Length: 391
Image 1 (cartoon, rainbow, N blue to C red):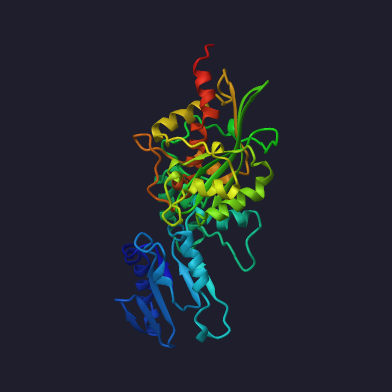
Image 2: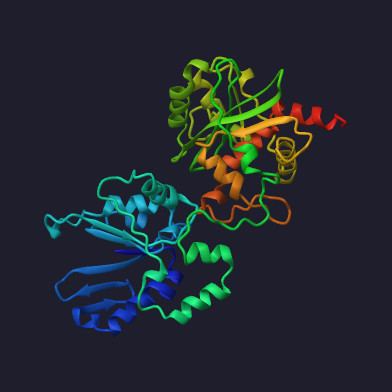
């Protein structure tokens, strides 16, 4: 099977390309092409099924259940959800009539900053791809049949960032319009920091159906001034409270006795799936055996207000500020948090752009966790103190 994001996209792109192959001689090997089901039957009896993800109307991916195939293709994998890729792995190899033939999954994509980058490109760069996985980088310039005039036109007319991404295959570039984290400064805010057992542990949580995004931080004042250190993060992909608690216990179980839990106030909503309708936060409190006083949530701040507060924190911790009064830093290994700080955008009203959750930086789960941390009194106290200062 070959999968594309939606039926209109499938018809407009993949099926058009396949028709060209038919017109150029492949049709002699095809006995039937059922365009109602988009199923191609070849002369030897094998079949090729064109399918759509249609995630908006089928989030459980029921259309793939019971499907028996021994291979799959994902056209523009960056436009699909990670759950769909996992489903392709699950279904590939289920058609036993193929005999002892190893299943194969092929995918195409453009450079992107979503799950495809972390799953494939980043692991390839680190030489950590699983056995039998392969990443093959192919640029348009590698195609000897592309006219030189077309390549020159791309170079002359494309915006530099788009050219770097789509022509040169640069996975690092991404155009950011109206960054939510104003005054973000890489050299000022990305610095090594680690858990300190002498400081209170603060865990800020954002809840979504999938994933949960948590950050682990310290916020304190000492003889050297004010400090906010985000030193660790967690991403709980299937939004499972038990897994979240196990992750926290494994990392910091001995230091939970006086920790603070803060975060998404919606986590206080009752869960009808629980016998006593306990909220997410209440389930976490019980599972981690915390005291009610350790659960410190406030009503979620409006995006515009928290953007102003975050900008205030970043501005007063920037090396470019002559009156720097805060040490705000994020540990370089907190990749999801750093991605959000770098790339999450704001719309004209100051709200976070979240129109496409397939783009990692538009999920903004860890950005939300940062917002809730800044909204906690440990950081708000600094903001109030700094606003009263005069230089």
